[in-house]
Image 1 (cartoon, one colour):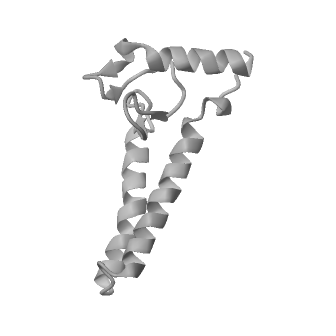
Image 2: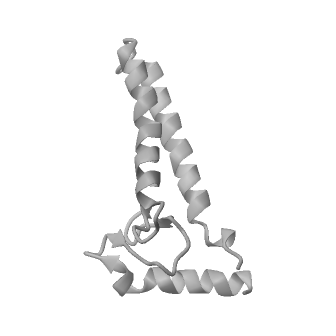
Length: 108
């Protein structure tokens, strides 16, 4: 399947209201992506039809929380170091979501 056709297919699946539960939870088995753009606003959400959805959700939360907790335990909570670490972690997770949600990654 051509990559342009695949992008259109993914966009069609994502746009289908039947794949959105309560308007905010994406659930589409035909979509191979685990991370997809949000329907409204900016950001990403999880495709809960994928088996790896919950591990991705837990790991991304742990990736942000663990370093911040460790810094807090060492007395750096609320300091500039803590805020810089938080900003860097958010940027890293955002870039990873952007990369994994891109329909150009799926070419088959």
